[in-house]
Image (cartoon, rainbow, N blue to C red; front, side):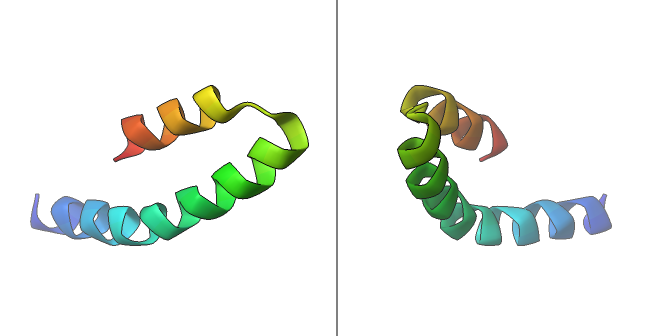
Amino acid sequence: MGLRERVITLRNGSKSNFCILVIGVFGVLFEHYNYVFGCCTEIG
């Protein structure tokens, strides 16, 4: 459980920046803002 929490924390830490990048790239390319935002919200 400790390892899992660490992985989730690590992923969430990099996900916030990653989500910004994804929203920018995929938002411009595919204009699926709602889908990307929903995905990032589910991930954390």
